[in-house]
Amino acid sequence: MDLQLSGKRALVTGGSRGIGKAVAMALAAEGASVAIAARSPEPLEAAAREISRDTGRPVHAIPVDTGDDAQVTAMAGRARDAMGGVDILVNAAATPAGQSRAPRFGEITAEAFWADVNIKVLGYLRCAQALAPGMIEAGWGRIINISGLNARTAGSAIGSMRNVSVAAMTKNLADELGPQGVNVTVVHPGLTRTEAFPATVAAIAEAQGIERAEAERRLARHNTLGRIVDAGEVAAVVAFLASPRSVAINGDAVACGGGIPGAIHY
Image (cartoon, rainbow, N blue to C red; front, side, top):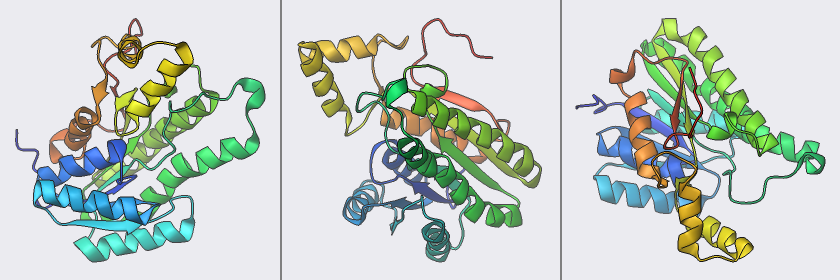
């Protein structure tokens, strides 16, 4: 299927690693012009070179802290200057979940909560506010917010609160922007195989006194596929949502965790 992304212009935050990087790779492979943004310049530049090498497409690297209003405004301007506009925004800049033990109820601090929310919730909102006006003017756009299955499960209070907030923001933006040609969706990955995954498995194996292979087998039991979903597989779903082909999906949540056993979401 031709996703009709050739000639579209995409900005992916959190694009230097993990799911964000995989999304940028998928969009570039489909013929989109791509800019990636993240806080650390050196990994960001390295990711841009890798994506460009593998797809044959130019990739623009824009350092940004999405927790800062002025930096987000500047990022949006640089992306527009580099590509002539932005049709697609993929918000993926956030502190990764699942790489350390979630704080228990009594350990949660206001500082930790607001630091997380400022990046993942307000950061996503800042980026949407900076780029949606251009999409509205063009009469077409896509905003995809990468959230997570902590929105549907307990175990990480801050993780659940931030992800539910992203889902709620997505629906509100979709209702407002949909009539103007801009679709907004939220994607909920589960545990995903990224560059950070081996370290996560190693930590679990050490803590439980088991082999790494056994630790991965136990983690894979948490979905109905029986294996860990790869970042590229999540990116394929995001690429579809970013395309004109996805016009029938707006304001909805799409889970990409391999299927939570037993749960029914409707």
